[in-house]
Figure 1 (cartoon, helix red, strand yellow):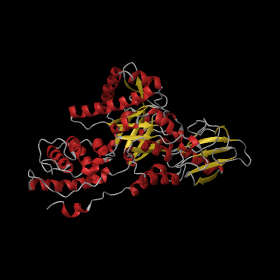
Figure 2 (cartoon, one colour):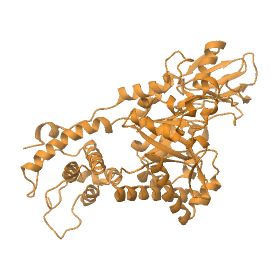
Figure 3 (spheres, one colour):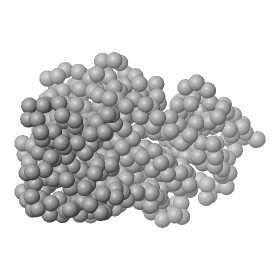
Figure 4 (cartoon, one colour):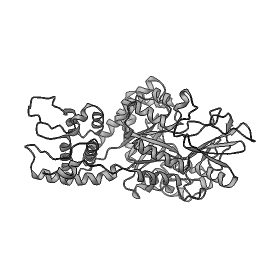
Length: 519
């Protein structure tokens, strides 16, 4: 205990400052270094960082301030997870009432941990899936909100004239009839339909994804390189998100390319987070969430992002850990292999999910910020010959495989289209044990994809690596109708949810928690 009022450099000072402002990101950064040794250090009042956070939680409870309560409970959970001593050793300014409050808060923390320890299951909805015919048609009302913790609406455009997000499809906001469907001719636009799903799952959060592969980098540069335009766009983003009742923003710039782009993206992330925090403080509303969908290939990661500059400001980082191989190659390869192949050399060894996760962690991102992308589709190829074809990964190909009946894109099949082909047309199926993914082939057609078995293995990988959870691309590519795969509705998404729930680890309390937290 430090009693010298004039000493500004007492052990654990930085941790106490983090506790005072409930800065969870700063706390996590400090606990990765030498400050872990000061986790139970007391200030001149005999107060540990854990005590300070508990008092903040008590005050927030009395004042019914859910925003501060959430922050303080999250702060407490991080301290507990890193071994903070829950034994109450109070200083001279503490009395028995504070101890009672502390006891009650420990119960609240335990209950809170059940929710806070939950794996993320982030699900992308694509607003162009409404244009598919027949069984491929998909709109927000087809989403099962009980299967996801976060829903992402892909995509919003960047309007360079108004310097604001804007809809890609007219019925994002307005109601129009699509494919003569009664469902799409309701009085609501798809934004509204999408956000009404929260009525069925009050814990679920919705985010608007800005950009996507069709928004050129020149547009991102024009808006965000200029500080004036960037700040104006951010202010308009907040208005847009609040107006249409989204809980946050997902940045999807594919991809920053130059050193200047890299710096611009860092500033963009930092400015958004600061603006979101300020808006929440001024309006007494829950802070808007901020996530980013990011590259998976190590050379691209290193060129596009300063990981240490963006990580503290993002709630989650969605790894687009798929499209490692496709019809842009002259050889066949798996769309989303979990592990490298023993025969791969050089940069080929970066073309797998394990390498992606390692690249982000090596760059300074804590695993708890990373959400692993899972693909509910396959990439297809045309083999060199029909008879006795070479079906091994990296065998030469002659371009993309045939399009699907519903998605209608060369070299691409949804999971339900793959199920339909395998079931009807006597395809050969196999599972690659080295890269932990399935493949199918018939004549000169070859598909690398994911099924329930590979998805389960990837969920185990997520838990083992202590990642935050899984991100799904995309809802409309699963067998959402339950008519093609014979596994019920949303078989892959259901497998993700159930597997991660089983792997969810309960909070571990230390011995002092059970025996000595009140004396």
